[in-house]
Amino acid sequence: MPLVAHTDLPTFERLAQEGETILSGDTAVQQEIRELHVGLLNMMPDAAIRATERQFFRLVGQSNQIAQFYMHPFTLDTLPRGPEGRAHIERYYETFEQIKRDGLDALIITGANVTQSDLSLEPFWEPLIEVIDWACENVTSTLCSCLATHAVMQFRYGQKRQPLGFKRWGVYPHRVLDRRHPLVSGVNTRFDVPHSRFNEISRSQFEGQGLKVLAESDTAGPHLAVSEDGLRIVFFQGHPEYDIISLLKEYKREVKRYVAGAIDTYPPFPEHYFTARSQAILDEHRERVQAALARRAPVPELPEALITSSLDNTWHDTAEAVINNWIGIVYQLTHIDRRRPFKNNVDPANPLKALRETG
Image 1: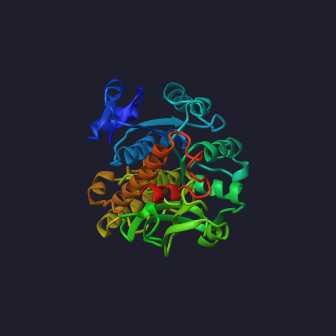
Image 2: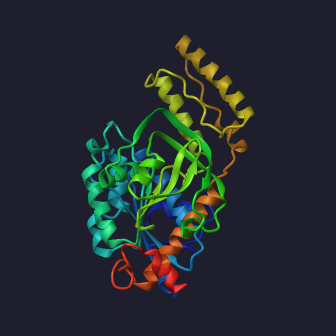
Image 3: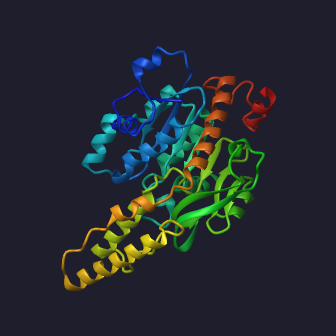
Protein backbone atom coordinates (compact mmCIF):
# COMPACT_ATOMS: atom_id res chain seq x y z
CA MET A 1 0.00 0.00 0.00
CA PRO A 2 1.12 3.56 -0.52
CA LEU A 3 3.54 5.76 1.30
CA VAL A 4 2.04 9.06 2.36
CA ALA A 5 3.99 12.21 1.47
CA HIS A 6 3.04 14.01 4.64
CA THR A 7 6.10 16.30 4.34
CA ASP A 8 8.03 17.73 1.37
CA LEU A 9 10.95 15.33 1.86
CA PRO A 10 12.47 14.95 -1.66
CA THR A 11 12.61 11.16 -1.29
CA PHE A 12 8.84 10.99 -1.85
CA GLU A 13 9.13 12.74 -5.21
CA ARG A 14 12.10 10.58 -6.20
CA LEU A 15 10.20 7.38 -5.42
CA ALA A 16 7.15 8.64 -7.31
CA GLN A 17 9.36 9.20 -10.36
CA GLU A 18 10.53 5.59 -10.03
CA GLY A 19 6.91 4.42 -10.22
CA GLU A 20 6.15 3.91 -6.52
CA THR A 21 2.64 4.80 -5.33
CA ILE A 22 2.84 7.95 -3.22
CA LEU A 23 -0.23 9.66 -1.77
CA SER A 24 -0.33 13.29 -0.82
CA GLY A 25 -1.23 14.04 2.77
CA ASP A 26 -4.49 15.66 1.69
CA THR A 27 -5.51 12.60 -0.33
CA ALA A 28 -4.59 10.21 2.47
CA VAL A 29 -6.83 11.86 5.06
CA GLN A 30 -9.83 11.47 2.74
CA GLN A 31 -9.46 7.68 2.61
CA GLU A 32 -10.71 5.34 5.27
CA ILE A 33 -7.54 3.27 5.34
CA ARG A 34 -5.66 2.59 8.52
CA GLU A 35 -2.39 4.41 9.18
CA LEU A 36 0.87 2.81 10.23
CA HIS A 37 3.64 5.07 11.49
CA VAL A 38 7.16 3.79 10.90
CA GLY A 39 10.24 5.58 12.20
CA LEU A 40 13.59 5.58 10.40
CA LEU A 41 16.56 6.37 12.62
CA ASN A 42 18.99 7.24 9.85
CA MET A 43 22.56 7.18 11.16
CA MET A 44 24.24 7.05 7.76
CA PRO A 45 26.73 9.78 6.78
CA ASP A 46 25.72 12.68 4.58
CA ALA A 47 26.77 11.03 1.31
CA ALA A 48 24.45 8.06 1.91
CA ILE A 49 21.60 9.60 3.88
CA ARG A 50 19.23 10.12 0.92
CA ALA A 51 19.91 6.75 -0.70
CA THR A 52 19.25 5.06 2.64
CA GLU A 53 15.92 6.89 2.92
CA ARG A 54 14.90 5.66 -0.51
CA GLN A 55 15.95 2.06 0.15
CA PHE A 56 14.00 1.63 3.37
CA PHE A 57 11.03 3.77 2.31
CA ARG A 58 10.76 1.65 -0.85
CA LEU A 59 10.75 -1.63 1.08
CA VAL A 60 8.03 -0.43 3.44
CA GLY A 61 5.97 1.10 0.65
CA GLN A 62 6.04 -2.13 -1.34
CA SER A 63 4.49 -4.03 1.54
CA ASN A 64 1.02 -5.21 0.52
CA GLN A 65 -0.74 -4.73 3.85
CA ILE A 66 -3.93 -2.70 3.84
CA ALA A 67 -2.51 0.43 5.38
CA GLN A 68 -1.15 3.87 4.59
CA PHE A 69 2.46 4.26 5.65
CA TYR A 70 3.68 7.41 7.30
CA MET A 71 7.48 7.43 7.46
CA HIS A 72 9.18 9.46 10.17
CA PRO A 73 12.92 9.95 9.58
CA PHE A 74 15.08 11.23 12.43
CA THR A 75 18.72 11.02 13.41
CA LEU A 76 21.07 11.56 16.36
CA ASP A 77 22.44 15.03 17.11
CA THR A 78 25.82 13.63 18.12
CA LEU A 79 26.63 12.30 14.64
CA PRO A 80 29.08 14.48 12.66
CA ARG A 81 27.43 16.29 9.75
CA GLY A 82 28.52 18.72 7.07
CA PRO A 83 26.53 21.83 6.09
CA GLU A 84 24.49 20.00 3.44
CA GLY A 85 23.63 17.11 5.74
CA ARG A 86 22.64 19.44 8.58
CA ALA A 87 20.43 21.47 6.25
CA HIS A 88 18.68 18.34 5.00
CA ILE A 89 18.04 17.11 8.53
CA GLU A 90 16.91 20.46 9.89
CA ARG A 91 14.42 20.91 7.06
CA TYR A 92 13.01 17.41 6.63
CA TYR A 93 13.69 15.31 9.72
CA GLU A 94 11.81 15.08 12.99
CA THR A 95 13.48 15.20 16.39
CA PHE A 96 13.54 12.29 18.80
CA GLU A 97 11.41 14.39 21.14
CA GLN A 98 8.74 14.62 18.44
CA ILE A 99 8.99 10.89 17.84
CA LYS A 100 8.50 10.13 21.55
CA ARG A 101 5.60 12.56 21.77
CA ASP A 102 3.68 11.22 18.77
CA GLY A 103 4.64 7.53 19.00
CA LEU A 104 5.47 4.89 16.39
CA ASP A 105 4.09 1.53 15.36
CA ALA A 106 7.47 0.26 14.15
CA LEU A 107 11.04 1.50 13.96
CA ILE A 108 13.95 0.87 11.57
CA ILE A 109 17.51 1.74 12.62
CA THR A 110 20.16 1.98 9.90
CA GLY A 111 23.86 1.30 10.08
CA ALA A 112 26.48 4.01 10.51
CA ASN A 113 30.10 4.69 9.67
CA VAL A 114 32.45 3.87 12.52
CA THR A 115 35.95 5.07 13.36
CA GLN A 116 36.65 3.20 16.61
CA SER A 117 37.36 -0.48 17.25
CA ASP A 118 35.04 -0.32 20.28
CA LEU A 119 31.53 0.82 19.41
CA SER A 120 31.05 2.29 22.89
CA LEU A 121 33.49 5.06 21.88
CA GLU A 122 31.38 6.15 18.92
CA PRO A 123 29.35 9.39 19.15
CA PHE A 124 26.08 7.53 18.55
CA TRP A 125 26.56 5.14 21.49
CA GLU A 126 24.67 6.79 24.38
CA PRO A 127 21.85 8.35 22.31
CA LEU A 128 21.32 5.06 20.47
CA ILE A 129 20.91 3.28 23.80
CA GLU A 130 18.28 5.85 24.74
CA VAL A 131 16.36 5.25 21.49
CA ILE A 132 16.50 1.45 21.86
CA ASP A 133 15.40 1.55 25.50
CA TRP A 134 12.47 3.79 24.60
CA ALA A 135 11.52 1.66 21.60
CA CYS A 136 11.52 -1.58 23.60
CA GLU A 137 8.89 -0.09 25.90
CA ASN A 138 6.84 1.83 23.37
CA VAL A 139 7.19 0.38 19.85
CA THR A 140 5.80 -2.94 18.64
CA SER A 141 8.99 -3.96 16.85
CA THR A 142 12.37 -2.44 16.02
CA LEU A 143 14.39 -3.59 13.01
CA CYS A 144 18.17 -3.09 13.33
CA SER A 145 20.35 -3.03 10.23
CA CYS A 146 23.97 -4.26 10.24
CA LEU A 147 25.97 -1.84 12.47
CA ALA A 148 22.86 -1.16 14.55
CA THR A 149 22.63 -4.92 15.15
CA HIS A 150 26.24 -4.98 16.34
CA ALA A 151 25.67 -2.03 18.68
CA VAL A 152 22.50 -3.48 20.22
CA MET A 153 24.15 -6.84 20.70
CA GLN A 154 26.96 -5.13 22.59
CA PHE A 155 25.06 -2.81 24.91
CA ARG A 156 21.94 -4.90 25.45
CA TYR A 157 23.37 -8.43 25.42
CA GLY A 158 27.05 -7.92 26.23
CA GLN A 159 28.18 -9.50 22.95
CA LYS A 160 30.90 -7.60 21.09
CA ARG A 161 31.25 -8.11 17.37
CA GLN A 162 34.32 -10.06 16.29
CA PRO A 163 36.80 -8.71 13.69
CA LEU A 164 36.99 -10.85 10.56
CA GLY A 165 40.44 -9.65 9.53
CA PHE A 166 39.08 -8.85 6.07
CA LYS A 167 36.02 -7.30 4.47
CA ARG A 168 33.02 -9.59 4.06
CA TRP A 169 31.78 -8.09 0.84
CA GLY A 170 29.41 -9.44 -1.78
CA VAL A 171 26.14 -11.31 -2.30
CA TYR A 172 25.81 -14.62 -0.44
CA PRO A 173 23.29 -17.48 -0.39
CA HIS A 174 21.35 -18.01 2.86
CA ARG A 175 19.00 -20.68 4.13
CA VAL A 176 16.00 -20.39 6.43
CA LEU A 177 16.57 -22.20 9.73
CA ASP A 178 13.10 -21.93 11.26
CA ARG A 179 10.33 -22.04 8.67
CA ARG A 180 7.62 -21.70 11.34
CA HIS A 181 8.44 -18.14 12.35
CA PRO A 182 5.98 -15.66 10.78
CA LEU A 183 8.81 -13.35 9.65
CA VAL A 184 9.88 -15.94 7.07
CA SER A 185 6.41 -17.13 6.10
CA GLY A 186 6.32 -17.66 2.33
CA VAL A 187 10.01 -16.81 1.96
CA ASN A 188 12.19 -18.97 -0.28
CA THR A 189 14.07 -21.48 1.86
CA ARG A 190 17.26 -20.34 0.12
CA PHE A 191 17.84 -16.72 -0.86
CA ASP A 192 20.59 -14.15 -1.39
CA VAL A 193 21.56 -11.17 0.78
CA PRO A 194 24.33 -8.59 0.24
CA HIS A 195 26.86 -8.12 3.05
CA SER A 196 29.46 -5.40 3.55
CA ARG A 197 31.36 -5.45 6.86
CA PHE A 198 34.65 -6.13 8.61
CA ASN A 199 33.10 -7.65 11.74
CA GLU A 200 30.38 -10.11 12.66
CA ILE A 201 28.16 -11.46 15.38
CA SER A 202 28.27 -15.26 15.28
CA ARG A 203 25.38 -17.66 15.58
CA SER A 204 26.69 -18.83 18.96
CA GLN A 205 26.66 -15.22 20.21
CA PHE A 206 23.02 -14.80 19.22
CA GLU A 207 21.89 -18.16 20.56
CA GLY A 208 23.94 -17.89 23.74
CA GLN A 209 21.72 -14.96 24.73
CA GLY A 210 18.48 -16.79 24.00
CA LEU A 211 18.01 -15.10 20.62
CA LYS A 212 16.74 -16.98 17.59
CA VAL A 213 18.63 -17.07 14.28
CA LEU A 214 16.13 -17.41 11.43
CA ALA A 215 18.41 -17.27 8.38
CA GLU A 216 22.10 -17.97 7.92
CA SER A 217 24.77 -18.23 5.25
CA ASP A 218 27.45 -20.93 5.32
CA THR A 219 29.94 -18.26 4.25
CA ALA A 220 28.62 -14.96 5.63
CA GLY A 221 27.08 -16.24 8.88
CA PRO A 222 23.77 -15.16 10.42
CA HIS A 223 21.72 -12.55 8.64
CA LEU A 224 18.25 -12.59 10.24
CA ALA A 225 17.63 -13.06 13.98
CA VAL A 226 15.03 -12.04 16.56
CA SER A 227 15.04 -11.18 20.25
CA GLU A 228 14.03 -13.76 22.84
CA ASP A 229 10.33 -12.81 22.61
CA GLY A 230 10.40 -13.44 18.86
CA LEU A 231 9.61 -9.90 17.69
CA ARG A 232 10.59 -6.94 19.87
CA ILE A 233 13.94 -6.58 18.10
CA VAL A 234 14.62 -7.91 14.60
CA PHE A 235 18.29 -8.13 13.61
CA PHE A 236 19.68 -7.83 10.07
CA GLN A 237 23.41 -8.42 9.71
CA GLY A 238 23.33 -8.08 5.93
CA HIS A 239 21.92 -5.35 3.69
CA PRO A 240 18.75 -6.61 1.97
CA GLU A 241 17.73 -2.98 1.44
CA TYR A 242 20.57 -2.41 -1.06
CA ASP A 243 19.78 -1.24 -4.57
CA ILE A 244 21.11 -3.24 -7.51
CA ILE A 245 23.97 -0.74 -7.93
CA SER A 246 24.84 -0.27 -4.24
CA LEU A 247 27.83 -2.63 -4.25
CA LEU A 248 29.05 -1.14 -7.53
CA LYS A 249 28.96 2.35 -5.99
CA GLU A 250 30.78 1.01 -2.95
CA TYR A 251 33.42 -0.59 -5.18
CA LYS A 252 33.84 2.74 -6.99
CA ARG A 253 34.36 4.52 -3.64
CA GLU A 254 37.00 1.95 -2.67
CA VAL A 255 38.84 2.54 -5.96
CA LYS A 256 38.79 6.28 -5.27
CA ARG A 257 40.22 5.63 -1.80
CA TYR A 258 43.03 3.65 -3.40
CA VAL A 259 43.72 6.48 -5.86
CA ALA A 260 43.77 8.97 -2.98
CA GLY A 261 46.23 6.83 -1.01
CA ALA A 262 43.79 6.06 1.78
CA ILE A 263 44.31 2.31 1.23
CA ASP A 264 47.43 0.56 -0.05
CA THR A 265 45.85 -2.35 -1.90
CA TYR A 266 43.57 -2.11 -4.90
CA PRO A 267 40.11 -3.29 -3.76
CA PRO A 268 38.99 -6.83 -4.59
CA PHE A 269 35.66 -7.49 -6.28
CA PRO A 270 32.54 -7.99 -4.15
CA GLU A 271 31.94 -11.74 -4.24
CA HIS A 272 29.20 -13.26 -6.43
CA TYR A 273 28.20 -9.85 -7.83
CA PHE A 274 30.02 -8.98 -11.07
CA THR A 275 29.85 -11.19 -14.15
CA ALA A 276 33.05 -12.60 -15.64
CA ARG A 277 32.84 -10.01 -18.44
CA SER A 278 32.43 -7.17 -15.94
CA GLN A 279 35.40 -8.40 -13.96
CA ALA A 280 37.50 -8.41 -17.13
CA ILE A 281 36.44 -4.81 -17.85
CA LEU A 282 37.27 -3.78 -14.28
CA ASP A 283 40.61 -5.61 -14.37
CA GLU A 284 41.50 -3.60 -17.46
CA HIS A 285 40.40 -0.44 -15.68
CA ARG A 286 42.65 -1.33 -12.72
CA GLU A 287 45.62 -1.60 -15.06
CA ARG A 288 44.81 1.81 -16.56
CA VAL A 289 44.43 3.35 -13.09
CA GLN A 290 47.73 1.96 -11.85
CA ALA A 291 49.51 3.02 -15.04
CA ALA A 292 48.12 6.55 -14.70
CA LEU A 293 49.24 6.74 -11.07
CA ALA A 294 52.72 5.59 -12.04
CA ARG A 295 52.90 8.37 -14.64
CA ARG A 296 51.23 10.86 -12.27
CA ALA A 297 48.64 11.37 -14.98
CA PRO A 298 44.87 11.89 -14.55
CA VAL A 299 43.11 8.69 -13.49
CA PRO A 300 40.33 7.44 -15.81
CA GLU A 301 36.77 7.23 -14.54
CA LEU A 302 35.39 3.82 -13.68
CA PRO A 303 33.30 2.60 -16.66
CA GLU A 304 30.02 2.17 -14.78
CA ALA A 305 27.90 2.24 -17.93
CA LEU A 306 29.60 -0.94 -19.14
CA ILE A 307 28.83 -2.72 -15.87
CA THR A 308 25.34 -1.74 -14.71
CA SER A 309 23.38 -3.53 -17.44
CA SER A 310 24.88 -6.89 -16.44
CA LEU A 311 24.13 -6.60 -12.72
CA ASP A 312 21.47 -8.86 -11.21
CA ASN A 313 19.38 -8.21 -8.13
CA THR A 314 18.85 -11.61 -6.51
CA TRP A 315 17.78 -10.42 -3.07
CA HIS A 316 15.05 -7.78 -3.33
CA ASP A 317 12.05 -10.12 -3.61
CA THR A 318 13.00 -11.92 -0.41
CA ALA A 319 13.74 -8.63 1.35
CA GLU A 320 10.31 -7.37 0.32
CA ALA A 321 8.69 -10.58 1.59
CA VAL A 322 10.39 -10.36 5.00
CA ILE A 323 9.47 -6.69 5.39
CA ASN A 324 5.93 -7.48 4.30
CA ASN A 325 5.72 -10.15 6.99
CA TRP A 326 7.21 -7.78 9.56
CA ILE A 327 4.77 -5.00 8.70
CA GLY A 328 1.92 -7.53 8.72
CA ILE A 329 2.77 -8.66 12.25
CA VAL A 330 3.00 -5.06 13.44
CA TYR A 331 -0.31 -4.29 11.73
CA GLN A 332 -2.08 -7.15 13.48
CA LEU A 333 -0.64 -6.44 16.91
CA THR A 334 -1.37 -2.72 16.79
CA HIS A 335 -4.88 -3.57 15.58
CA ILE A 336 -5.27 -5.69 18.71
CA ASP A 337 -4.16 -2.79 20.87
CA ARG A 338 -3.51 0.40 18.91
CA ARG A 339 -0.29 2.18 19.95
CA ARG A 340 -0.14 0.14 23.18
CA PRO A 341 1.36 -3.07 21.82
CA PHE A 342 2.75 -4.38 25.09
CA LYS A 343 -0.12 -3.43 27.38
CA ASN A 344 -3.39 -5.11 28.23
CA ASN A 345 -4.01 -8.16 26.05
CA VAL A 346 -0.58 -8.48 24.36
CA ASP A 347 1.96 -10.39 26.43
CA PRO A 348 5.32 -8.53 26.29
CA ALA A 349 7.21 -11.78 26.81
CA ASN A 350 5.42 -13.47 23.91
CA PRO A 351 3.76 -10.94 21.57
CA LEU A 352 3.39 -13.53 18.80
CA LYS A 353 0.99 -15.45 21.05
CA ALA A 354 -1.64 -12.79 20.34
CA LEU A 355 -1.39 -13.53 16.60
CA ARG A 356 -1.99 -17.23 17.14
CA GLU A 357 -4.95 -16.58 19.42
CA THR A 358 -6.61 -14.18 16.97
CA GLY A 359 -5.92 -16.34 13.93
